[in-house]
Length: 630
Image: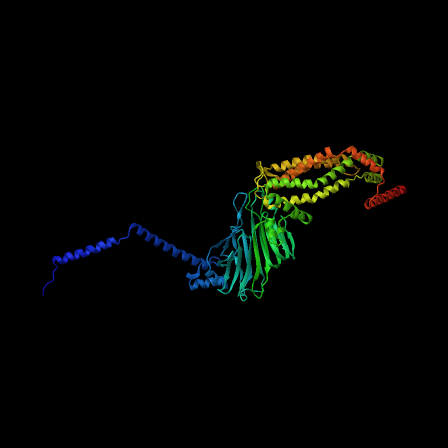
């Protein structure tokens, strides 16, 4: 048998084949970049597997942390169902996070946990620090529906996973947040948003849950909000931060700036007012009842704070055919009278223009007038012009008031004679005084009535300027914001009831009030009667002349500079009017001659004067009879 041997050709062939294979292996060797990419891919795969394990563990351990359920095994699904009951399906369909939706006016975030709004940003406004205005953010608000289930569970929707969906139909954006039992059985929060609208439709409804929700147990809607501070002055903003509501077919009321705990019935809407911004829950079908609470969160007004007040509402809901179906609306926006009034749902009552005639004057006189002036001039100038117009309209009242004071001054010597003549007979002195005043056509009441006529106007303006949204962040002279206090100096300490700053407009207003009262009070002091056993009216008036400006200085140091500007201009004009009347219009000699002429004429008494004379005459007769008996 021939032995096989490797010849030279076979050896060369094997070498060539080995060389070719080696070359091919060398050519296919990964580059350093490819090796780095492969290593990164392996690391990401490991992290993804680890994250999946953590998510699965979270679902097994808690009913509120939920993930997409595609990776859950049967054991984890059983654990989830034991915790969530019928709504375990929703947890397996939902995901963690938030859904962001924006309109022209609002930037909103809807939390998948709880299905409610987790953030509300007003896009067109900033606060005193130029930061965006948020009405809801960082868990300062909570919306929850509490209900019992047929399997003896008590569930809070704020702890449960909702499945989000967003659809758009023309200018309408619909955000649906569903807490699911299955694809056809769910509890839904439905939000409907439009551009250029602070109001959004809001419906809470259930479908196919009549066998899940226990109708024998009370279902409660709970809404809470901690109001963020938005203004420079904490005390000023807190004074106008409260709960407003409409109830019993059109009645409106508010809790005031105090802590409150109130029960109301037949509620149409509830508004958490934060001075210039408001959150309102409205309903198409009135709630039968609601429990409202308000709590002040500002412990020290001298210290910066994040929140002003805590608001809470507890509202029982009723089932309809075993299902929840409540059609409502949300309003998140400015406390602007024009904006609120446009909705025609009585929301303009949130703006505190005052009750009765005061609110009427603000709504139908000052609001249209100020809007007209502000449409073509700076708002500071608009305040000055409006003040001038108001003072011109009331100048005739001021003239009547000063004329009455002048008459009383002229009659003072004769009145003093009557008091001295009948100093031992007070009743007779009063009779003669009344008779003289009646003949002369002069009476202290004639000076009081014009002042009473002016009071509704003064009080209406006192309510108007702090509530005028248009003044917010409008500057004038040294004031940066006419809706807040002006500052010319910051103090290194805080003065009780005054603050840690110095405002100039209240100082100017106080000086003007002092000189105005000096002119008017000086006249009154001269004519003020002094009777035995009665307080010294002259001293009281002098005290008021000094006390009123000091009170003004302290009270208005933290108030809106627009209001202090109004009082400053108003008192300057009043001083000017009085000086003109005194020096160029009233002639005391002529008035004296007129009084003497009237005294000669028979004076017909009116019914009131006759009644007073008769009562005084009867009192005098009784006094004389008592003296005879003694």
